[in-house]
Image 1 (cartoon, rainbow, N blue to C red):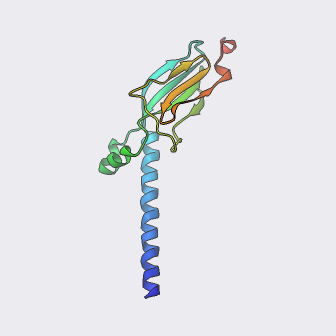
Image 2 (cartoon, rainbow, N blue to C red):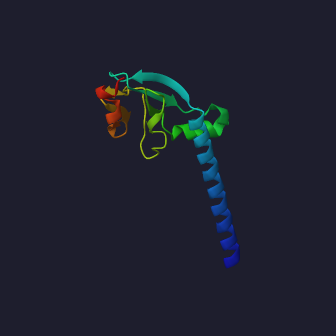
Image 3 (tube, one colour):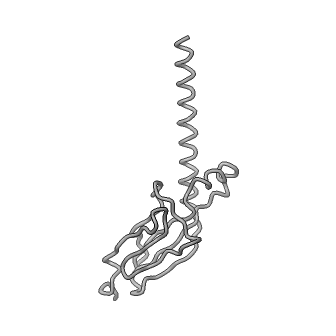
Length: 132
């Protein structure tokens, strides 16, 4: 009796791990295949951000369900040369969106809407002295 319960529990654990890995893989692929939605330069024209929308459509019903529990968009900040400075893509603990409140620049600060009101980063390299 104990061995059969142990076998069932191990099987259930294995199924849960495989389902979790599959969902995580779909999430990674949806973020890798995300569609850029807008590109906005800061006032100094030294950095810009791009809003991306994860693409869950190729994954059918599983993708639609996963989309319900995922961020609506994520944001990546680049310098003038196109090098990525920072990304909010893998901030799974923070819900990010861009339909109600627009992300934007405030000097050298990039602010984006999240479930914590506004989140963001400061980029000293995006200041006025960085212009060429």
